[in-house]
Length: 131
Image (tube, helix red, strand yellow):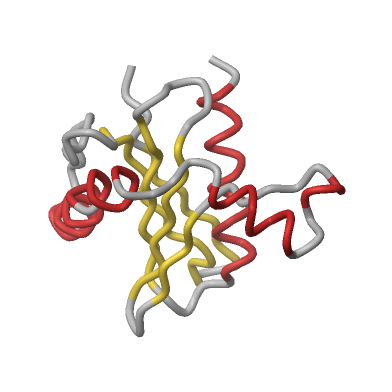
């Protein structure tokens, strides 16, 4: 079952959210699903290609240590996702707890509320984790 998802929420004629998500292997750096949108496929493919280096060199406990240092650990909060911003796009990466070695990636054009994008992204992660 593909987890490719595109969300579009609108207010009148103005789109508020355009978000394309796809799962990727953290080991091979390959997308695990087909993405029918060429621009999103290219951006997500480039993001996926960074996963082996990013997560292969990352000490798994380092995010917990950073969170603890910020005082969030005691509250039960830890880092969940990596958010990358450019002048044109917002990218999000989150490893899936229910699927070791797999991350959900997302891309959205800038100009959209980061909070709105993350809220929709978290809902999609929760849906994948509940399967």
